[in-house]
Amino acid sequence: MADEGEITLRVMGEFLTRKIPGRRTGGAYSLFEVASPQGAGLSPHVNHREYEFLIDEHPLRAEAGFLLYVAKGTLHAHKNVSRCTGRMLVSQTPGGLYERFFEEAGKPADVDGDPLVEDEQTQAASIVAIAAEYGIEMPPPIT
Image (cartoon, rainbow, N blue to C red; front, side, top):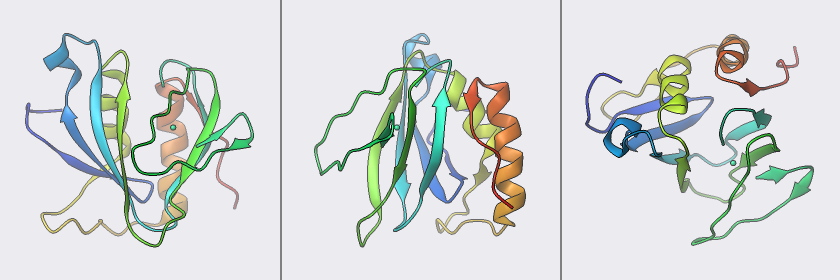
């Protein structure tokens, strides 16, 4: 990412705001705030290189203040099942890798926080291909 400031990207229906880039922590970790509109979330996937709430096919309902650790190589997903926008802080260790994935896969959110409109199937297929480059295994979208 070009600078040290916050940047917000839209990735598969969610807004990700970089709070702490990996380069500010010497690569130890990075921190993002994820805002998920009602019904939004990522499909099941496996992170092979780093680090989300279906965990090995076991559903887990997380409430405010919940802390969850997901080890690399674990099938996982999350979905906002509340009636409002959900927010979570996601820390990845080591930092840097997912920052580059989010920047490549995401689209900048405009200043009002509205997403750029794009065909969801086209976006999903593109993200599956980009994810593979970063060690993230996602099933291809169903057409």
